[in-house]
Amino acid sequence: MTKVIYPGQTIGIIGGGQLGRMMALAAKEAGFRVAVLDPAMDSPCGQVADIRIVAAYDDQQALAELAEASDVITYEFENIDYEGLKKVMDYAYVPQGAELIRITQDRRIEKMELEKAGVPVAPFVIIESVEDLEEQVGKIGYPSILKTARGGYDGKGQVKLTSPEDLSEAAELIRNTPCVLEKVIPFTKEISTIIHRNAAGECHILPIAENIHVNHILHQSIVPARVTHTIEKKAEQAAKQIAEHLSLVGTLAVEMFVIEDDLIINELAPRPHNSGHYSIEACNVSQFHQHIRAVCGWPLRKPILWESSIMVNLLGQHVAPAANQLTKHPEWSLHLYGKKEAKHDRKMGHITVMTDDLERTLFELEETGIWS
Ligand code: ADP
Ligand code: MG
Image (cartoon, rainbow, N blue to C red; front, side):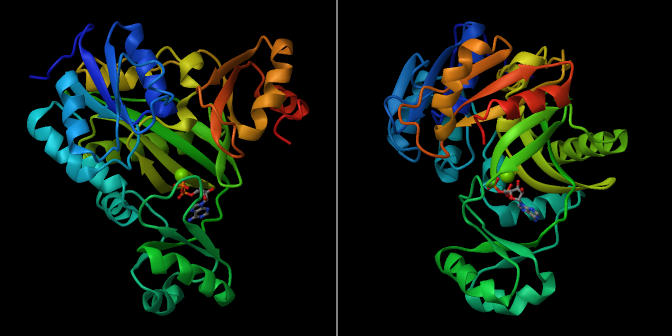
């Protein structure tokens, strides 16, 4: 029997960033209370939560306090303390479990699990030392990308190798931490599939997003992705296969490369994803609502896309120019995450535009000059 969490009960979120904030807003809509654990007092999620626990993610005492205040525990990012989460599971209800965290916080383990799930990944080798790199680079060849096994995001912790001359820069990365070396995939598009599953095994996938990155940071998600029916079916099948293999409960975002009519799985995120923000306006169930339903043991809703949409990120440098044009754009759904300092390249918010003409809207967004 699946445990059901009811309105009035408290959802505890580990991590207080924007994903936690949007989860909390979805939860509060249905009358849940929200507790959050984050090192910052004024975190994006802390601003909308009922209970704030201000401490490090691996603070056992604080995790126990969160568990004490909560009827169910979830998390908004993968770099939380795996051992800590496992301990919390001894005395609190954590329907997502800790396995998903163990797997997705280490690219080496993640890639091996993807292979076990029977989905294609880029050719890769595990690199534990500088000698390893020198020995194994020949197996992958150039161009290739060296990625730290743990802790990378938005292209951080990555070095591209185009020739042996780049080996010294790569050696710097390995000196600090184990890595994965993978072949550069000459993809034609990047897409992502966000899949939700509850403890009863019910599974739904949001419409697939096409993702445009600028400087390794997600810039735009275009939905529906402009891909063939074959790719759409393959992407959904791969996501389902991975979710079943991992006995997923909650949310899993699957980043994929498209090459012609084939797919390669890039990486996983065991949580709502930046490329799914469009679903807040454009779908009958957002990735955050569906996540809350999944962890609370509610039946999942079959997603419907009301209209094509484009989500554009607002990084630190985009906030002021976007604010200046706000009054000219009734079609913009503006989201700001409540972060005080608009640092360069920091994700401050996003805009979603629903449209019956993707190409025209892409052009109009470009014309604003905000992102150029
Ligand atoms: P993260 O998002 O954690 O920073 P990713 O592995 O998703 O790390 O890499 C960031 C971006 O770098 C990808 O979205 C893609 O644009 C590019 N990239 C990563 N791996 C490859 C690859 N093997 N081939 C081509 N491009 C890649
Ligand atoms: Mg990525």
